[in-house]
Image (cartoon, rainbow, N blue to C red; front, side, top):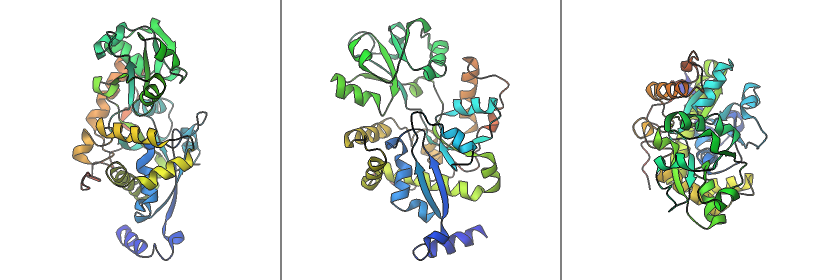
Length: 331
């Protein structure tokens, strides 16, 4: 029945799109940027429409809370951060579930200055100071302290201003793979050492597509179409013509530059953020029980998550691991 409806709808998209498409709002966790490029791509190249969806992308704000918008029913899907947020949401009994993982690796990084004895990951615990945000202090940095011997006593607050790090050559600073290193190159005129936490055991998925549990239960077909179309959008964005998607990103975020977008895309590809690991075998958005369980165990060991948290409730494999995006060749 569903298949018949989709075929009929597709045949009439050009005649009456308002009647054929399901309206969906996708909330971002930050301003429009290349880290949401696959979804912008799926809007502008008609992939969402092909899947019977009329998608509005709602950029986030520094003071915004997309998770609350999702819970309140103001948006249909939300671009969450990583699995840790889902574990903590479950501890509060929030009815949210991750339905796909667009990023196989969390882009969270630390940076150091080259040539001062901080060129290896195992050198970083001796650095001082360490510029860490309030959120990072109680999440990934808490894991770094437990797993790798980093020190709380050397932490200074990172307020998203990299000037202190640029000046102090023996400091380290947190960042996002696609953002802070570019800013350092532009402002500090040097290339920092980049250490991706995912390459050192911080095994969470990231850029999760989240939905309310009632949406998953009542309208699984809608969820499946959004997950599939988003996966295809990511493949087209990374390896196809993304000019219109980038124009849409800049329109939504006038502060975004072509240089920043190009840098972000290059690093997403170089580090395999979207299409490495499970995604290379199972399709973009892939998740596995083993990977989620392993990260949960790490967070419990670090004392960040309560051991009695029912981590199995925070995600579902119902909509992923179907090979979506694997049949589209890279360019």
